[in-house]
Length: 314
Image (cartoon, rainbow, N blue to C red; front, side, top):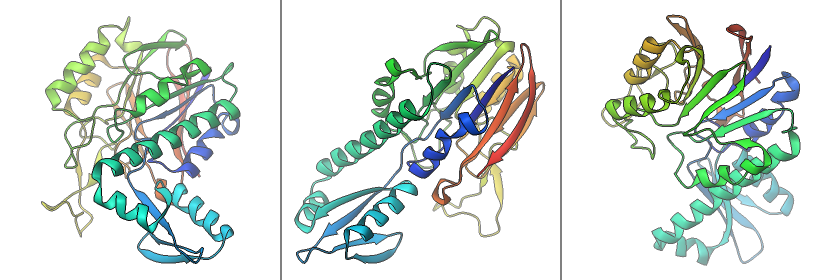
């Protein structure tokens, strides 16, 4: 038997990532996957003032920071919810405000630095000679983050995109980070037809689609995995808590047609769920990264089937 631990959608939360690092030992997992939407979305400036204190707008509240102890506490708090703290002078702050290119370069640097730090922790905390670690971006991640992950492949971290991985019992894992169109026009999304073509191209490399694991960030349409809060035209969530299916019809069609053994999905944070499409088990750990909660699935696989699976969080 081989045990998988699958999680996704950390969105820059170092606390969630550190919890994930403990999964191999805590759950006795052989293959550990963190796939999709690794990076955060916002910089939080912390402005140093002439009197040696700092000021920052932290989650809507202006805080005055008077000591290094307070500063370190705030830095950790910001990082753990997925934002990127940046300490600067008032002059530097204004320069970034006035120069969008300079601000973009800073954001890219901060994203890459944190991703590199995270992957370094993997090499320190996990025995990569006896465990497989699979890490890939999702639709929210900028394209440059791939090079950071690839730079750790020589250490044993697996970047799965564009590959067919045969890691155990001749099960083949294929991975795809793209999703169907969203209102936010994220870096890695495309129309359903293009998504279908990407999936078919991957399946051409597989020996037996029925003994394949679909590691697709986008969940299949019309399942328990793709229920998101219904949005108004101005992108505000429904006041009545209405939900709608927003997953990919191309992903669902591929699962219906080829009946892979397992589908590993994410993307929709509020759908911490499992479902079945025909014989195929599909799962989505969802995400509650701003609360520092790690959600995942532990899945036991024998030579030709899923033996058991369980939702876990903490």
